[in-house]
Length: 143
Image 1 (tube, helix red, strand yellow):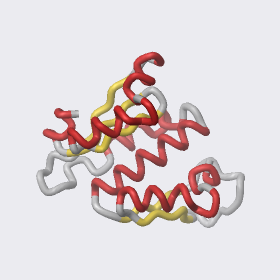
Image 2 (cartoon, rainbow, N blue to C red):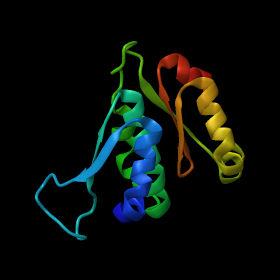
Image 3 (tube, rainbow, N blue to C red):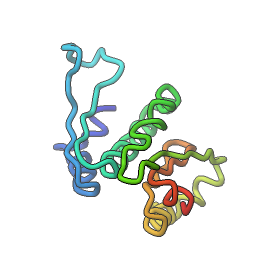
């Protein structure tokens, strides 16, 4: 899934960096190389909102390529950066969709998701059938 996430000449990662004002790259943490590894670490630098938006967009792409991946790391993802903003209320809420609900929630070319994100000011991303809402408590409530 690393090649898929990186994209041709790194274009997919660069577009996410541009969207969320972050810097991202894959890094070796255990010295092992090659295709035999189960996963690779992605380093994401930026503010808490940018890191979260980038992470969830990458997770959405990985889940498309490797269905069920999020379930393995769900609790780690949901709890990451909890309370680590100026308000101390930063967190992530989730909601599971049925298949027919997901296409409605996405909208044409993701338009409904983007409108939700803009109006609530929360980070809104769909990973498989799971909707993830990250932000301050009031932003998540609006989403």
